[in-house]
Image (cartoon, rainbow, N blue to C red):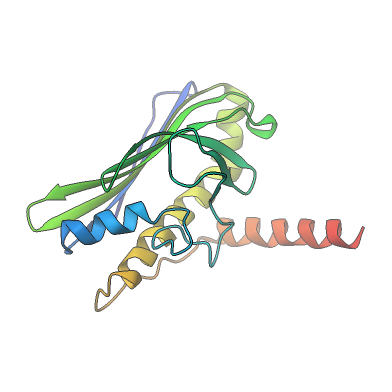
Length: 181
């Protein structure tokens, strides 16, 4: 597991997660191609809001997960899926993309997720305070799910930070209040 967060000031966010898997390339390709589909082997919808795309994993498809909105801009089957963020009122300026990639490395395969966006100070601050750690937890849970789904003998189980647990609790309370009202 590894995370790289390059600080380029508050005008942009570059957040990269990757994990190495000792699995055949064809298996990793199947995992990526299952994204947002009925037998999704990657997105951790058991613990987080599901990734839903209106037309599946094809360019031009719109959707997202929870309040995060994006559209599919590029699909290279088995190798790369690029999503362009759509305007979102709660994130202000969040212009850019997030990408899932499968990268062959000898007998291993690297699964990488990248967020690369331009932003403003308000949105950067919101990202740092309320989004980044939750995003990191979602991606690590996704990689854990891949390990389980490809049959690795000792799949990793990421632990959520106190900050992530607190935000999930707070969000759960908000949802229960809105359902009562």
